[in-house]
Image (cartoon, rainbow over all chains, first blue to last red; front, top):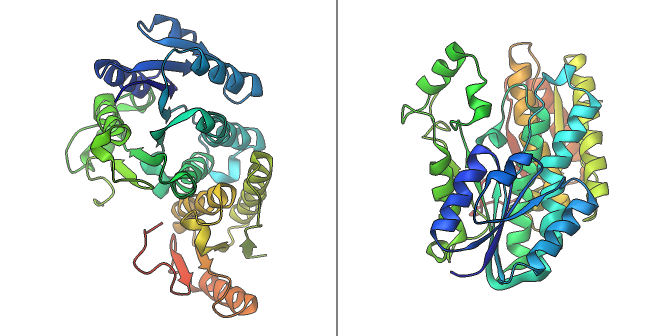
Length: 232
Length: 124
């Protein structure tokens, strides 16, 4: 597998692990993030933009066109949370999460598909929360929407481009570390594999779905959750 | 109103976002009133067969309904999804099933499919 792969949310915990996995496999990485921390990444084509804007999407397209390598992959990994019980959720927090987690991924994918090589692969980072999660109506709707987008595009882009999703469970990122320790302990205790996942665990699944190793797989959701979807 | 029918949207993001927000407002109002709800979507949209816009709305609603089910269970209200294929039975029969589902008080977080199109296919 040779060429360029676009990774959004590249400066976050999972994004960094995905970038490292792609670099280790000698791919050109177009790393996209809103955060200035993007500047700390070495060996990538950095694009610091807000993907919820037209200008942001245009900037990524331009970076891909100038990357000097054919576009062979896209990882829609950018995401935010604005949690609240449904009765307390504001219109603003609903819209923000839907726009960033789903709208940005959809519009970027539509913009990049015409540039993608035959045999390309798209991986969307959903979440195990798409199965339902207390206090996350907006987030679960956005991640469920990503699953629908994955299925629809896997059909419309076949046989030229494969489209799959990963659904991470509890992963040891800054977001997880912000959870109170006693709550976190209970959450880990409910995971059959008895630990939080690492960003590398997610990156391994993303790499599998991007690479020819998964050449006969499209339209699927791979849960990376330590068995949590089965336990009480 | 207990039953929310997902609208048939196109593939523009603006249409998708507006339809998701319509479902959100319906859901929030129902949650505030502690009222059981059922969302009706097209079963083909759960599998992405009728375009990305409709698929995002349908699967997004299903995930959100599961979250509602978690939030409502202890308070005694439920949230479910009926997936209709648009061919089996009538719209009125589908609406009646949805209302019945909302009245059980015991079934929650489920997707009930009308028609055989899901058999042998992916689980939403």
